[in-house]
Length: 357
Image (tube, rainbow, N blue to C red; front, side):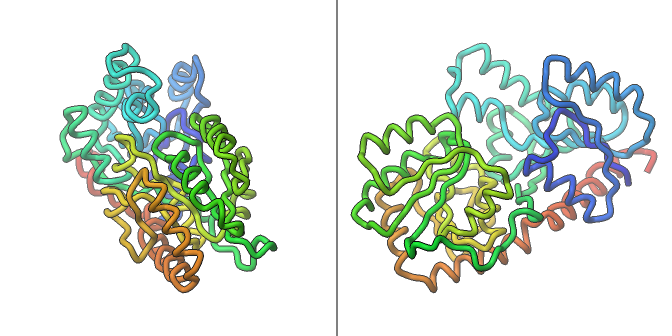
């Protein structure tokens, strides 16, 4: 079977990396036809496809692909199309980040794209059943064409590193991400305020994004000395910082998107055999339980601070969570496992529908 991975996706982005490399690890031939996003990206894709000489069995439209799906449907003709929706434009930009109002033309445009890009596909991939439920309800779609594939992580980069630690004998917590509202960086800052008298607890914030200025301003306003803010890091450098940390912090926001996703950084932390604290959500409970990571109520800095103290004082619990979380990742969310699941979807949901097979 030969798969054409098509679109304006970034092959190094975790979601795309996991699925492409996961398929290859399971013996599936994947050829790629992609362009960087831009004003003429779709036009360039069109002409490159006309020159594309290799035959293929199934087209997979990589993330992000809402704008690509209309072109893909035209070009693929009678071949099946799998659309990795991964996330909703409307849910992300409008409901979570609130970049535009729900009644704006932009919101209506995003809703149109989300709905019709899914309708044009034979199979749509999303990361949790809760997320599938959101798409079905919000965009009036049928549940039958959706399939769940966990996000996973680039497990060739994010893997256990022994012997790395800070040399100051303090307890180090790490938050990394793009500061979107669902991550709830503000609540971590407020937990740091509660714990400021614990001089051996240090918070590291890595990344940049929408809510970073607000988080930095809040930390300054609260007079915090136990937080360090740094910018984005290359994956190989981030891996070292995670390895040196004692606990990884997941998401803690209180937005419509929070209950329906499991963030990539949670998988990356588990792939590195690190204990994780994150919000107790419907999505998280689809795969994880209390023995895999520490699940707490969202948007609750008091509970977060309490949990941090408990993990700081209980090394055995940290070891238990890191070992159980790592096993859960290896067995359910490694790139090879997820590639195998996608391979089965391609065979069972796509190929039988095509009379050539």
